[in-house]
Length: 234
Image 1 (cartoon, rainbow, N blue to C red):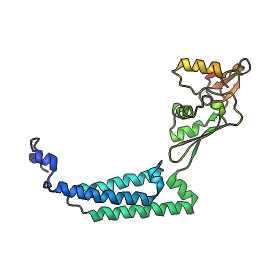
Image 2: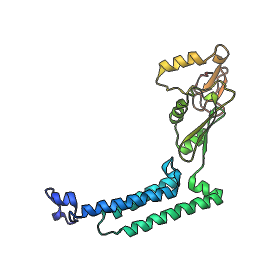
Image 3: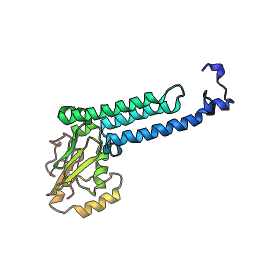
């Protein structure tokens, strides 16, 4: 449109655009057809599309959203073009899934793979940095599983779909408290409940990675090199 064709008082253009008012009925019909087709396509793509999405599935959903918007709203575009693109998406997704099933390298490339964030009560700092997960994000997930001590955690995986898988150790040991650092009242309460003096008070843990050692002598953490310690809790 030209600049002189735009007027704030032109309610007809604002409400209906350049298409005639009758096009609103056509939009309803187009939307109904695309909606039914989209339900069929999503069902064909599989149950995973309605659950936690992998990288490839998220890309498919975003592509579908871009495809269906134009045939529903643009008067000079037909429905067949959108329908053809939807069919192509089905074949692309099914084809890539089949290739991933046949080749594990392709599966890792398209689906992603799990990242180990905690191993034997120690934070895997390099992996956390790689997947951009902060200490407090990880600790929040652990607290939701009623885990308050990193020493009782055997493994934590960040799955390809973005979910956390948490496995607790069969033999809990003293470790880093993962309670919110700003809530000093709950920290004090839990420390009194979990710490068993005097033997466990002699253990300290690195606040950066969770490495636990005897209180003396104090030296930089041999796991991450930091030099900030707190009492370990059991």
